[in-house]
Amino acid sequence: EIRKSAFSGYSKLTSIEIPNGITQIADEAFSECSGLRKVTLGNSVTSIGESAFNSCIELAEIEIPQSVSHIKTGAFRGCESLKSIKIPNTVICIGSAAFACSGLRSINIPNSVKSIESCTFWNCEELTSATIGEYVETIGFEAFSNCIKLEGIKIPNSVTSIDYYAFFKTK
Image 1 (cartoon, rainbow, N blue to C red):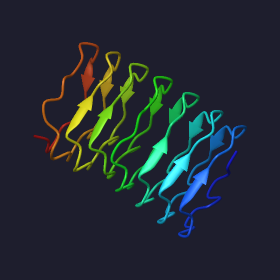
Image 2 (image 1 turned 180 degrees about the vertical axis):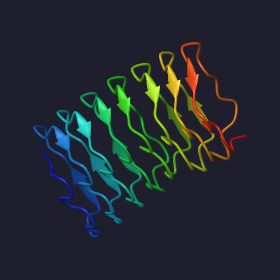
Image 3 (image 1 turned 45 degrees about the vertical axis):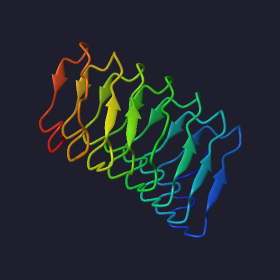
C-alpha cells in the first residue's frame, strides 16, 4: 500500500511507476503533486483512494489496470491536464467528484458501473461526450453539472433515477 499523503504536495515528482504487489493507493497519496505528469499503475492495484491524485494539475497520462475495482471520491479532481482516461470494465464504483474539474474531453462509463455519484464529472468544462454504460441505474446530484460543452448524451433504459441538477448547464 502507498499510505495516506505519502507523496502529497511533492511538486518535483514528475512521474511514478507503481510496482506489482502494491494493491492500494491510499487517500491523498499523491494529492497536489503539481509537477506529476505520468502515472503507471501495477496490475495488482485494486483501489484508488479518496483524493489520491487531487489537484495534480499537470497529470496527463495514467492507465488504470483491469485489477482496479474502485475509484474513490475526488480521486482525480482538479487534474486539469487529464484529457482522456480509459476506465476498465472491472471498475464497479466511481466516487463522488472523482473527475470533477478535470480536463476530460470524453468519457466512457463501463457497463460494470451501476451508479454515477454526485458531482462525478462536475465542472468538466472540456467534456464534449459521455457514454453511459447500459447497466447504470442512478445519476447523482450535479453528476454532469457545468459540463458546458456536453451535448447529445444518451441515457440508457436501465436508469431509474436522475437527481437534481444532474445535467445543469450542459448543452
